Image 1: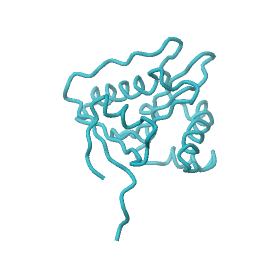
Image 2 (image 1 turned 60 degrees about the vertical axis):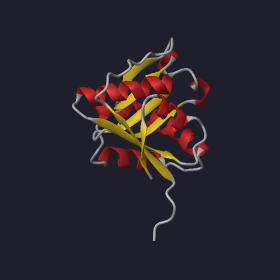
Image 3 (image 1 turned 90 degrees about the vertical axis):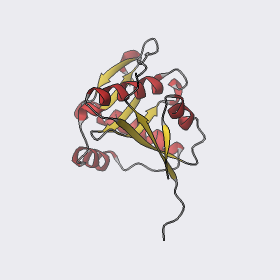
Length: 159
């Protein structure tokens, strides 16, 4: 018998007109290169997972997992870079229109980076013919992530 669900599934239907992302001053969208960016992405995700008391595998194991996942595609991983090209945010999506991780460095939160990354992700998948985008959010998440998702039109799919 399964225990209580710890995640809620949310979806964003892409048939309606989509809001365009607005990047905060000094922040720009960048493409992902696993060789150049893998360690920086891993470091940011490690911080985010630690906040949720969920350890992330070590860098080499994480990189192997990422690069061998059948839903991995480098063009569905979106980076936000700040001054000096520092990584300040990531939206790691699978090629099947699933948002695996959204992470913004603590020092750059509440400036619209997460929103811009999500809106860019929505537009990317809409341009590639997807009808919707999905993600999972922890039910216990009280950090504002679910409020952000809902403010962008994501709706509950259940547990």
